[in-house]
Length: 207
Image (tube, rainbow, N blue to C red; front, side, top):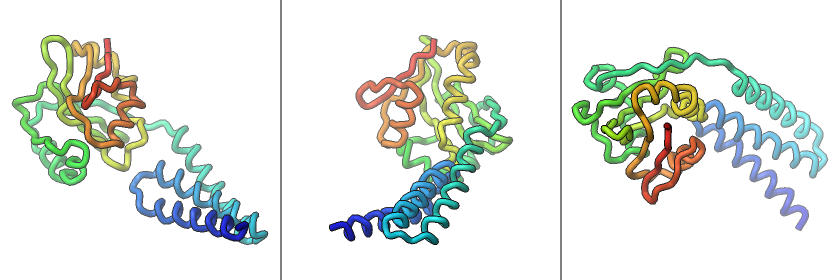
């Protein structure tokens, strides 16, 4: 029984390390890879293998160092509004079309049906595109709020809904809503950002 437990921890560590190689996000990679290294270190302690303990504690320390560095890093964010018919917008949507469909399966870009559009630059790289319809009551009906996978660490969301709250209020935004959310990861993101579950959709009061 004890041998089976030891082996299970070793297999779990292997799974963590394998999964870490499949993600395209620095933060997720460090968390998953660090979990794998720590699990292997525990495995090494259980089987009394000092090379395994030393190597994986070292790798865990490296992952911990980069996690601290990521969380403490001061990045440059900027919000830039757009009309919706710009060529760059279409190129961006075309390039990320397959991934966008996972979160907004029914989205078809029509700039004539949206009047509240912007992109978020993160260190001068387009990290997010936001397309919405602002009505007379101050509610933004979100058509698209897509963040590139590499930047899905909640920083972009916090920048939009917290740091740029003054910007939203200056545009007359009183609430932001999603009519339907089908992706579980997206729903989790919205809950973290303070959105309230409204059945199939979500809503956040701004002012």
